[in-house]
Amino acid sequence: MALQGPIPVTFDMVSPHGCYVVGEVEPVKDFDASTNGRFVQARDKQTREPVWQVAVMDADPTLKPAQKTVAVKILSAVQPVPPAAVAGVPFTPVEFDGVSVTPYVNSNSNRLAYSIRVREMRPVRTGKTGGKEAAA
Image 1 (cartoon, helix red, strand yellow):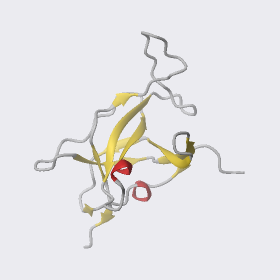
Image 2 (cartoon, one colour):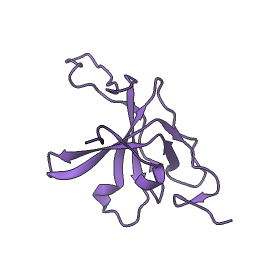
Image 3 (cartoon, one colour):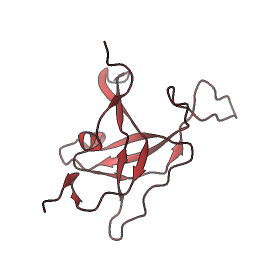
């Protein structure tokens, strides 16, 4: 099969209603290379770039509460910085570029799940509402 590895998608395909940063950007631990007392940051298998993660809340109103928050992995040589907070909003709206998903079977639920990886985190583009372009 020609489809192997991460599947490229657009941000709007993954989060059409938008999403919000609800956690800190943290390095992802390489569980195989780390030892007791020695942290080793995970690197992407294809690009060898360090892997970071941030918790985001999906704004889709149809999602169950347990499905709203997901970890997004960011491939970046330096620690990504979330966009500046928006006055009057409890969470910071964010968009991602270079999005890919990798399907896997969740061992706890035996259900299909997706790992989301991105190349860049950025502020929401102006003129967008709910993940869709605003009408002109």
